Length: 213
Image (tube, rainbow, N blue to C red; front, side):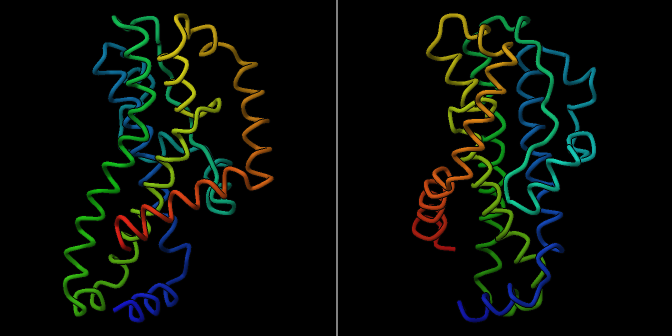
C-alpha cells in the first residue's frame, strides 16, 4: 500500500493539490477567529465581511504566494474589537486560539475521511486526487495550527499568551511595534531554520507516529 501511495503522490502535479488545500486551510483558520469573536459579542467580523467561508474574503495575495513557494505565509487578519468582550482576557484568548483549533478540527475530519479511503486499495486508485488532497489537507492543517500556536507576535499564540499571563494584554495587542519586532524575530528564527527544525520534528511525530500517514 505504501508503495502505491508514493506513486500516486508523485504522479500528481503539486500545485493542483496544494492550491485548493491552501484555500481551505486559510479560510477555515480565519473563519474560526471571526466566528468565535462574533459568538462572544463582537460584530466587527460581520460588518467587515469576514464571517464567511468565501476564500477570497480572507486571502492576502502576497501571503498566499509566500505560502505556496516557501510554505510560510499569511492571510488578511480578521479585525477584532477586543474592547467589547465581557471577559476581555478570557475572550481574547479564545478568539486567538479559535483559528488553530479550527485547523485541527478540519484536519481531524480530513483524517477520518482518509481512513475510509485507505481501507480499500481500489478506492485509493479510483479516487487518487481526492486521497492526495485529503492527505495534504491533514498535513497543512496540523502544520498551520501548530505554527500559529507559537507565542511570537503577530502569531495567534502570542495574543493568547498576553491575554493569559498579563493583566493588561491590550498594551501588547494594540502596539504595532510589538508586531513589527515580533515579525523580525520570527523571520530570523525561520531563516536560521530554528522554528523549521522544531516544527518538522513535532509535525513528523504527529503525522508519522500518531496518525501514521
